[in-house]
Amino acid sequence: MEIQKNKFKAALAAGQLQRGLWSSLCSPIVAEILSRSGFDWILFDGEHAPSEIADQQPLLQAAASGSAASVVRPAWNDKVMIKRVLDIGAQSVLLPFVQTPEEAQSAVQACRYPPHGIRGVGGMHRASAYGRIPNYAQNANDQICILVQVETMEAMARISEIASIDGVDGVFIGPADLSASMGYLGNPGHPEVQEAIKQAAQKIRAAGKAPGILATTAVDAKRYIDWGFLFVACGMDLKLLVKGADDLLAEVG
View (tube, rainbow, N blue to C red):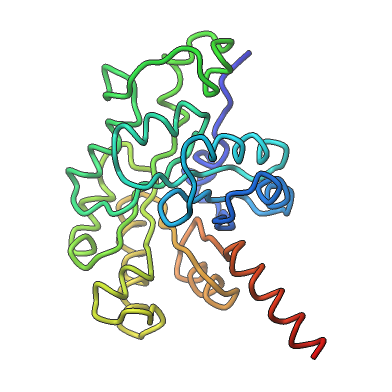
């Protein structure tokens, strides 16, 4: 048995657009449905969704039946949380609230085994097919996709430095927190916020990395793609469910 190649990481490195969906529903059934929907990737949220490590492994197992790559966002850029997420089989992680190049470097270190990092070595976990992948630890580093999230004005001021850290595959912009940091809480569509987002994409690409972002409408997703974002979450499962239910009730009358 061989280690699984990370097609999402390879696609970003090749500059290929990856359209995704954001999942907050914490349901293996939803994960299975979304993984077969034709999108390139799914983000399983552990920061703003009530999802712990024991909840996330069934999501990854369910999503493995489809074609979409799985990305997990731990609750924090924390070496212990990162270790546990990687051990349950996540090959791509989105690490929130990275403010400095040093914090980005710490994220990279947490995702890599020694001597290139500090990831703790465990043998019998899902990532290694419960010990059935020979030399998993020797090959795992190359298949981990490390995405860091920039979501404040302070971090935006250092985005080129953050993106330039060796081992960072992509930089993700969080529009909601960024707009709050800029003084426009609840209004990520404000022209100043949107201009900052556009400039961020240019700086990330200039550093040779992939820019990513969350869009909540198709219109937003298309605009971000036009601006050069390479991995775009085009919608949220929770919002799709709420809108579908509300629209149905309005139509029935």
